[in-house]
Image (cartoon, rainbow, N blue to C red):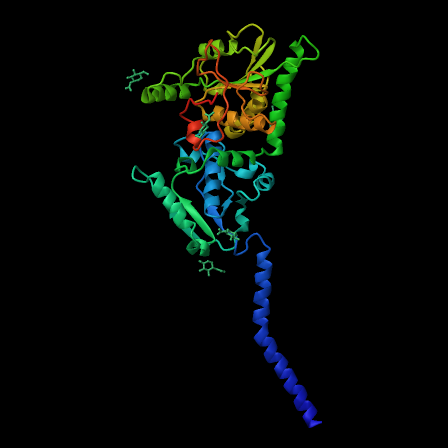
Length: 405
Ligand SMILES: *[C@@H]1O[C@H](CO)[C@@H](O)[C@H](O)[C@H]1NC(C)=O
Ligand SMILES: *[C@@H]1O[C@H](CO)[C@@H](O)[C@H](O)[C@H]1NC(C)=O
Ligand SMILES: *[C@@H]1O[C@H](CO)[C@@H](O)[C@H](O)[C@H]1NC(C)=O
Ligand SMILES: *[C@@H]1O[C@H](CO)[C@@H](O)[C@H](O)[C@H]1NC(C)=O
Ligand SMILES: *[C@@H]1O[C@H](CO)[C@@H](O)[C@H](O)[C@H]1NC(C)=O
């Protein structure tokens, strides 16, 4: 009896001891395993960047640059704030808007899977495990030094920091280290959220409606030409300065010059609808609908009856809708020095390449684009496509008249 009780007691004590010894271990193993399958696991690391600002396409470039920086650091980009309003200096009026209010977050990650990734702030496991990194600035902060800094922070020593937060300038002003094709890959993953693309489709159908009223041949759909008219006052001041500084004369185009060049595009047979993409409120000249060649029917937002429709949206969304309408146009005519025009031509070039055409400079190409600020041989604007093998985004977007045709 006695021995049995002792044995039982002994077993009980042993069980307790073993349990106490094993419990913390088994708990921590389970916690660790659970963590592994959560987005906020110890192995996922993040990059945080300052709010993204300025025009729609500067914001797109800045966003892509932040993604490519994160890719280089083997980190996921924490979903940045974009800016809904177009302000350059008044920082308190930038109206931050979350990335996923404009672009489809899930689509982005599924289209860009394996290349770059955007994460939610809720994915962060430990918000104090943060390293703040100041980007250098000034003349002495060269492209090489910037690249060296990125290489340094890609080292494994920094893996202990869950988040690296880059401080200072907005990503648009960072040095650039990536080829055009890398940017193009990121742009391809940017799909507008449903509400915005629905609104863009509404504008396109409105334009098509006007087109079908004036068509003469039932089989022939009236093409619409989108013209990005960079003639607003702010641009005119900027481009005149740029012309002086870079000693070239083909950056600024007046309304009259644009009208004359568009009239000379040989492939356009009347009737044609012209959609004039222009920021009405920045325009001093409200006569842009006058003077176009016969058979070319110009429409701006007002004439489409969409002023109120547009005014219902913030600057950023209006620009995103306009961008979409220009992207879908049968023909696009823009200014080779404008970022808005340049990114459009880049996306239209990608669209053409996907159909199996590698050189889009022929006269029978679908979705052609033209640069109105450059004079072609017979007074027409030359065809324009993006050289996707170019090594720098600068060469194909802002401050360049290279049109690769
Ligand atoms: C990049 O990070 C992932 C996990 O986030 C890790 O599995 C991989 O080994 C890392 N690659 C390099 C080259 O550090
Ligand atoms: C969070 O990170 C900080 C800084 O690395 C560290 O001191 C702290 O212990 C971490 N907290 C947890 C719960 O891991
Ligand atoms: C500007 O360009 C013109 C011809 O394109 C040239 O004759 C002139 O010397 C240039 N001026 C400067 C300051 O480079
Ligand atoms: C403006 O937005 C409101 C609310 O979203 C909507 O009810 C209204 O129809 C919109 N107006 C126009 C002209 O689109
Ligand atoms: C495209 O860019 C590459 C690299 O800069 C260059 O070698 C090539 O000649 C360019 N092609 C055209 C058509 O401009």
